[in-house]
Image (tube, rainbow, N blue to C red; front, side, top):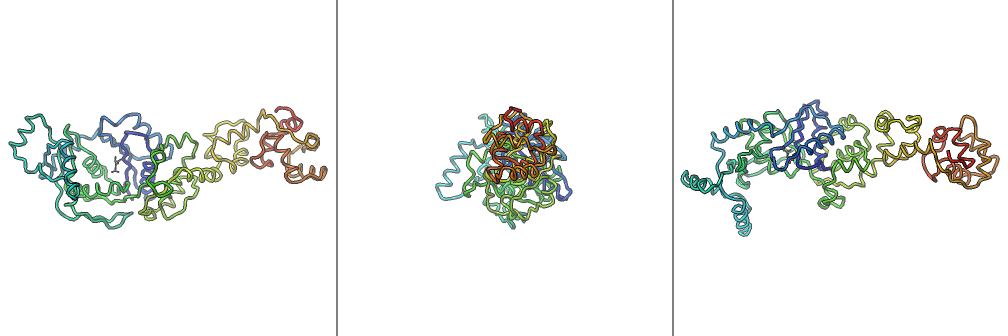
Length: 439
Ligand code: GLU
């Protein structure tokens, strides 16, 4: 049983990359019969917005990713204060007074000297008098976590054995000048307190993990298991273009993609398994295996969605779309079976329903033939019996036989099987259209 979490910051809409992280966490939790937490990382009060917190939840629901518990970091400051007290008592937090400008000068100097831009711990040498003087000048401290000089190792579920030397990492800032705890700390406090045993996130967090592992231990907890999935890349392996990288789920929904198309693509890109059309999350849960995720960037482009959406629709049962389609004015299940193999987007099913019930402006070619066809139209609208009889009577076959009928009956030159559409059009409308009346 795995307890996982998805921890977006409500500072914008979920994009495809976030959705992939959410989905993988959800799948791992559900596949193991464990639990899935949605945690809103909203400690940054200037940038977090309620409308994004709402939108994230709506988008998750659209994908079908339900959560067992919702937590907001903004309501948990007391826990962070406790952790801060623990760390201070253990001598693992120290006050620093550098301004952002001073820090960036230090980094630039280190880079110029060909050294990695690691914080030099100058603040550790400040005396109480120094600190009092700085505070007298109006400076407020931010607080850094004192890393222990030791090897940090973990067995990453995607990347395998990981090894960092703490000397090569900067002591992370855990508390801002205004007293707010930062993500590096809050995430660990929450992962401990909320019982998260498997942290799955993008591999841009790998070095955070190294420092956070020391934090877990400093707070008296064993670190959870970690899995860092690769990030999305463009189809050519390049960094995802800004346009595609910031594609929001909102945009995908508005573009008419099925949520299961998005889920099916996001569960399989970057893995050893091919992308397949899944029509339910249950099927995906049964087939998902974190161990199949590769270490290389996962290639994403909207063409993957365009290719898969028709296949997902084709494989979808009427019951799964009935509520979204609503009353179409025709026999819903029959229409769905007639058209689902021809759809790129669900909305097109509505167009076909409209064509069935009309009015349709028939496109009439070969008028004499259409008159004969109307005369021979059988009571039961059996397409093959009808076209068989017409073939015999007129000697027409293939395109010459079928095209004028399709044009007159639907006003279109292509579409689903006429054998299935004709009964939905019905005898009265079919006859009128063959005879050139709008119906
Ligand atoms: N709020 C963090 C982010 O969006 C969460 C990272 C994590 O999963 O720990 O990057």
